[in-house]
Length: 103
Image (tube, rainbow, N blue to C red):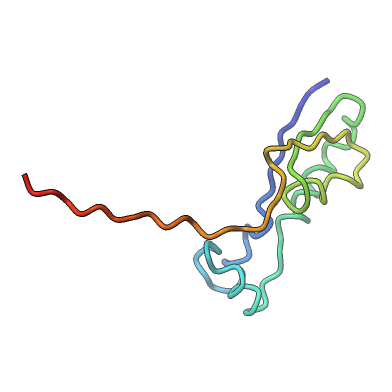
């Protein structure tokens, strides 16, 4: 059996569709401007091309919109990878700024 790792970025492509240069930190703004997620449908379209391999393909993916949502209805064997379980995004930790020492 062949294994395929799948990770879907659920907000990929949203920024460009509304004139933003990406969605890093701007996903809510993109949604407010009318952007709709594209990556899920694109993932399903790609996976349909693999539908003839259902007996010999095992997909390892993350939970939720990062993979499971788009694979579960496709009659493919799925294994959720625990380290990829989707969680709520967290802000980056504050990094203390260390002043330069004079030599």
